Amino acid sequence: MDSASQHADQEGASGPFSVSSIFAAPAHDDALPALSIHFAVPATGTFTWRVRADGTLRVHGARVWLTRACSPYDHWLSPGETLRVYRGERLWLSVDAGNAAARVTLTSAWRPPFATVRRTAGRCADWFALLTTRRLVR
Image (tube, rainbow, N blue to C red; front, side, top):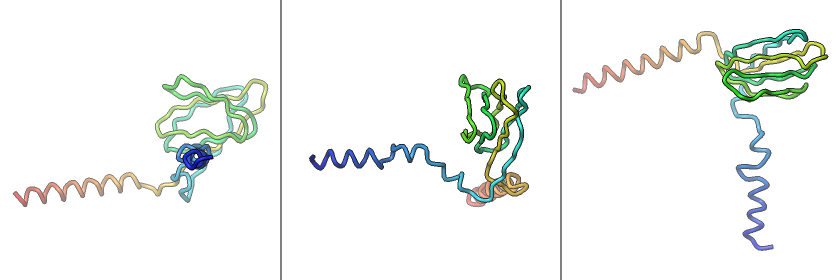
């Protein structure tokens, strides 16, 4: 075997598109502390939810059917499976026919209260400082 094919084999096994790197958790999932919301999806109805922060949805107990607004795809999630959800998405969840209620956990990175307000105020202060500096220079 020549060195080029050995390099290609090694590249395929651990390169940027290997299976482990594609399915690895994103870096922001490792952020601590995390906020987890647990809720039940009744066996007889449909549960709707608007996602407030990027997170991971995990199913426990029974198989769940999930659909997203503006998406042509539906998802069947078995117990233990996860799905990445994004801020602003509208989700509809229902339990597979004949099953008992399912439990679902939505986990996202915890943010301190008013973090968005503080960040926006800081950006406005930076913008104002830049604007006044430009005027003084002229």
